[in-house]
Length: 263
Length: 130
Ligand code: SF4
Ligand code: SF4
Image (cartoon, rainbow over all chains, first blue to last red; front, top):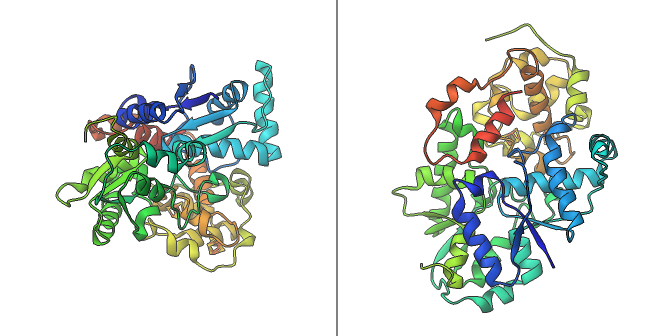
């Protein structure tokens, strides 16, 4: 089985930890990731409009490549995953959108109807590897560590299209935390926005949001938050100093537990 | 700066694919919106104002640049109205006219910080420029 992998631009640059440890752990768990050739940036945010087609084509091309090479496309970055999965869903679900996309790609002799299975790395762990197998592979269990999963908005929403977990009461990251021996901390703000891209223009709102998230997580006993989103990571980290809450990528913590990386 | 330029509700509906008539005015979108305190028009008001044709006011509002596209209102609207789609459509109507970009490339370098992920820049450009 080939697991095609779409790293995305951030994982090649600022979020190399997310990428490197993700790949290393996947190897150890028997599901090595194969980076697809010549992928292009997903655009970071999925358009909320109906009439923007051309900017979705880079995702469509990655999906076509994956369909023709085993049928599965894995992503790790929450943003890339959100864009690729929504694109894939809409092509299969929205006739008008599908028609327009297919008109564009017909000039390359291509046709696409959403055949690829898009998986987030967490789904790969849960549904292909299995959390029991992850648990068996743990060398350094994170016993006694109280860790909160931070989902943010992109990983699970819209729930109808992401179809990965209950968007209001998720457990996929908590189950992973349990598998690696940690104690998952549930807190209300785990699936509320960090302030996202507004940070570039005006950091007031992101600052308020992050402080609220951190205070909530800390009040519930978390000493660490894990995320799969480089933008959440950036925003959270910016205001985490001095709070006693550490911010890490989920693959970084997984690598520690699997003994792939020194803790 | 305020502008008299406006588009018709039909154009907004065509860009967004939203049907504001489905709204039952429960206010849930606004109650769940993390940016609500920064907006002069709140998500449920967008829906009502598009329906009644008050597009010009929305186009001149700061609210269109405060939406985080977090999709909370999309997830939690009981009627699948998706207010964020209307906000996006109004913002696009502004950005698509000449000189309508909200983010000026010259302003970006001074805002950069060493750890900023590419994802941040890519997303902000997507949202604030055409
Ligand atoms: S998508 Fe925008 S309007 Fe909707 S809840 Fe999030 S910030 Fe508010
Ligand atoms: S949640 Fe939906 S139905 Fe309720 S006010 Fe907002 S748009 Fe209307």
